[in-house]
Length: 262
Ligand code: F6R
Image (cartoon, rainbow, N blue to C red):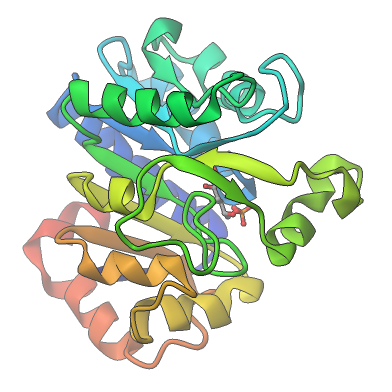
């Protein structure tokens, strides 16, 4: 795992977007694993800008989102399909038929989860998985006690997540759907590369536990310590409780692979 600390949230999002762009240019057929949430909004804005101004080409990319609410139709503005269409897909040249989200409206949710997992495998697996970290340490909607080898399935959202996502539902956590389909921790760990982004002082405690704490299913983001190629990009505020920052900064300043991002 590498931790890259940037001065502020804008710089962190820009570095993440540049890294994604680099991977797309290196492999135009890349399978992207995508996340939603507030942290990703600026990353998608930057990718749209790179598409418009620097001809970043999504035409051969395929994408799989981490999760989708159960019971919210795709045309509903609260759905993650709607979020992705509005913030990224509509504004770049990705073929919509190559963009995948779980179908939270399926009458056979168990079958839908198996179908989603198999479609990812049939596409050769996720090349680059983008991740945010929830206030309870979830990745995707893998809430506390999710098996660290879990696959795509339905999860009940934890109280902290209902609280975190309430602003999207008129500020009332009672309006947040109780369940979602999510890729499993095992699905995420099977991706070729992971890129996690976290910004803001409210993420400082969970980022310290995620990066430097023991691996535990109580904080599923800690499973990323097992991933062979995982990069965390954080801003100073989210890095505030990390103990090893001197070493992380030294790696970023000296390792040749980061030269073009410094
Ligand atoms: C959303 C997702 C979640 C979020 C996480 C952070 O698709 O997978 O794990 O990435 O809850 O959300 P924000 O960015 O809103 O803090």
